[in-house]
Image 1 (cartoon, rainbow, N blue to C red):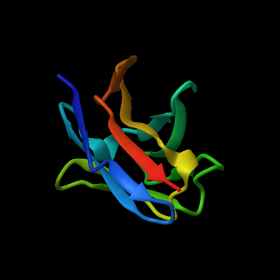
Image 2: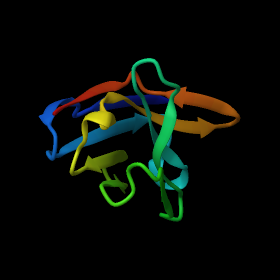
Image 3: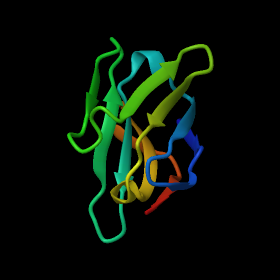
Length: 115
């Protein structure tokens, strides 16, 4: 059974940093494409960043240069380092993986950036 557990969200001032963690079980993060999505109030869920099994990363234009996705294969965990945070980064952040034609989501972690 695939389980994704996010942590690391919180309240931070604009310009600050946070690191989100996604601890995975039931899958091996190093051989799957893992992603972070986010959903702001009243908006659709959107892709923030993803990392493929080969280590190729992709970022939304809105976070490029500020966010970094990475993984620790030993801990089977994916991270999202968020720097230079802006109020518009306020959202619930979700860890995501697609496996065997099924979508799996974590429960989400709230990130709030105050101006």
